Amino acid sequence: MQKIPLKTIIILPCLAILFSGCSFHVSKNGTETVEAKTQVPKVKLEDTFDIEKYQVEEGDTFANIMANYGVSYSDMLDIVSSSMEMYDLTKVVVGHEFRKYTKEKKLIKIEYDIDAEDYILIEKNSEGVAVSKKTIEYEVTVTSANATIDSSLFLAGSKVGISDETILGMAEILAWNIDFATQVQQGDSFSVVYEERTRNGNPSRPGNILAVSFTNSGVKHQAYRFVDSNEKEGYYDEKGNSLVRQFLRAPLHYSRITSGFAYARFHPILGKNTPHRAIDYAAPVGTPIMATADGTVTFAGWSTIGYGNFIDVKHNGIYSTQYAHLSRFGKGIKAGAHVQQGQIIGYVGSTGYSTGPHLHYQIKKNGHLVNPLEIELPAGDPIPEDQKEAFQKFIEPYKDRI
Image (cartoon, rainbow, N blue to C red):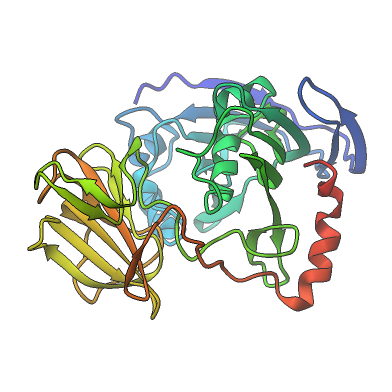
């Protein structure tokens, strides 16, 4: 590890000041008025440290970073052992940050950012070291923006200051209602209310999307984030119906649809018209394929009717899904295996009667093949009756912003 740390001395405020409920308004191009509330924790006068920051580089290990920080090998082993249930520190990630806090050249603590939400805290004490997992504290500003798509979804968002990460989050929330790979078009519009976050005054990754609406082909879809009394988080429409469906809209990230659902289609290998009651998704060989819903694998093997490597998953007494032409199966995928929605069950290939890499995906309802792009997929659980009043009260401030 090249150790050329940028050493900065951060002097925390000498006065213990607590700002509570301070409101202000900010305007920016393409966005609505922003209301923000900031709280600054009380700070002790003696909390003054020298802070040395270091970003993990290619080839770094936790052991050599700790050695450069002056941590003994035995303490390093204790730290790894103590943190194992929280995070495996032997797998530090390139680009993630370590911070070393010292006072009068004496090591006080070390922090390591696991991701955008949590960090590992390592503290020296009389018995050696103590390790804990902490939540990153951000200064949060709630903001909103709206746009109309002229060329692409991402460009429309960029023009009004919305990050790609927020656009992707918006698409994920509404993915059960809109296929963002094929259905988004010029003239569609959207509004989103979301959290902008800063950490110690520096811009950070965006926070939660609180509300979003997307008008696609004249149909408006809305979603509101709500955390119920049982700490269950979800996104719901304005009536409290869950946006999550029991089935994913598509089983993979694909480039295009090469063949749609048809009762007669010319088969390029058989040389005649045959039914194609499925959707063919083009994607590179090796692209992961996900189970579109929870279920049990009833078959995983070689098809004798031209499907090559083939998987059949039974979801309940009504629905089953099938995946064909796979290059290989996912780990543990065999008859009798239970799979969860989003679990990788195989990889795109071109086995069997196939002219190129793609996934042949079909859905059966009550034993009959149905169009995966048109079927009304069953929804998840709605807001519980005893919490609908709280939900309506919670989303009221956001209705006028989307």
